[in-house]
Image 1 (spheres, rainbow, N blue to C red):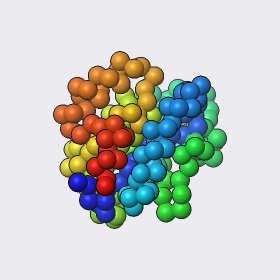
Image 2 (image 1 turned 60 degrees about the horizontal axis):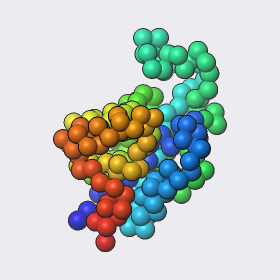
Image 3 (image 1 turned 60 degrees about the vertical axis):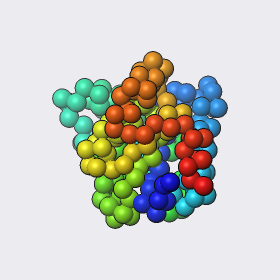
Image 4 (image 1 turned 180 degrees about the vertical axis):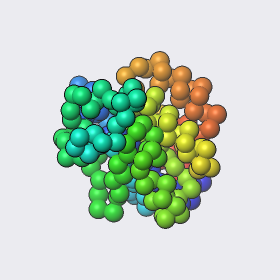
Length: 188
């Protein structure tokens, strides 16, 4: 049974620029919506995480293979439409929006300080992509001694096989892996 007072649901990178890759099928967002609604009903803190940069991409090193190309093409600044949380999963008042500058939700953000301030020690992870923010955040959260659950159907990846291997073989070494339905049943 989960202690709701020390638990947070992280909704990671469900921003327009990433959700649009899966937009042809709106049903893929239903598990996220269901997890968010369950968390709200059970008074579990919902925290949104996005990646965004200052104008001029001052945070992006030319040595960073993943983000240096972005700085050449534009977009992904704080005010850019691509970095705003998707309308179907918008935060409610009291649900923080954390901005990160790398793949992990902890990288360059105030997430760890926020979690400690809220006395959170249990994280429920959801996000886009399984092989990106979810993997990186899970690894760092485990190293920081958080208890972690990954909602496998509230994680999306462009490569279904990578998603399967991560959720079936890699993630269980450091986290519980559940469906949204199985997780919500533990909340009652």
